[in-house]
Image 1 (tube, rainbow, N blue to C red):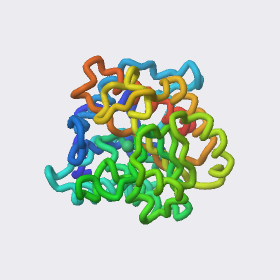
Image 2: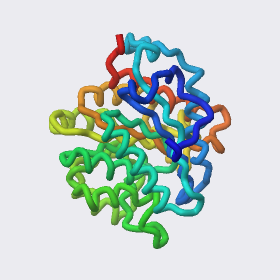
Image 3: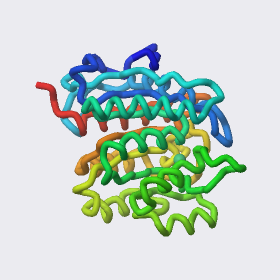
Image 4: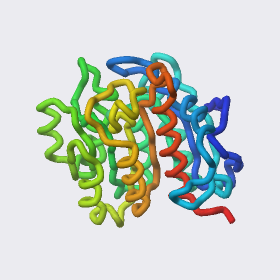
Length: 288
Ligand SMILES: [Mn+2]
């Protein structure tokens, strides 16, 4: 594909595209970040830190080397052209879904979720979106901009229907966002696991898109994000939540907002890489 570029594969990603069931794609968008920029380096940082991990998961008793997955590289994004960049992301995700792959999108800022959900909803009209995030992302605009990492879930609700949006771990929102959140299919604050347990059965028969904003995790464990928010969940709770999500039919994932510019020890990118590894191990059958 000419619209992607790649310097390094994610850990153990050795299958050719044609044979892969899951495909990693980076979307290094860093255009509307409001507080501190740097998410354009997210996909590369996640790939680099993935080599800190074992291919084998002690918890899942599975090995990445037995899985058929491919790393496509990063979608090339035209600098300064947000809408055109989103279109390019949508084109790539739509192609992966059309080819029967499960996309795993690495951000980049949270706005990359918008085109990915558009592509997934086109393939799966019954789509539900699960968002794990510190922020509601339900503003109608941010300083007049309707396309922003602070408005992304509002825009998704505009075309998908707000009742198809399931939000967990939210601990930052403004009053109008809380009004909008009343229309969400679920809106659970602060914690992720209790709400997920309560909601799981309602989502069991639906295709699900999972969007993980790394700032849902406490800044003590995930400091390398654009807009950190105190009092988040622990990595252990996040991994337990992933375990629950494996019970659902997840048709596409994203992991967004990793910002290596403020992640000096790489621990946020490392946790994101761990999530990607465990998501792959949970969703791709052993090739043998
Ligand atoms: Mn977000």
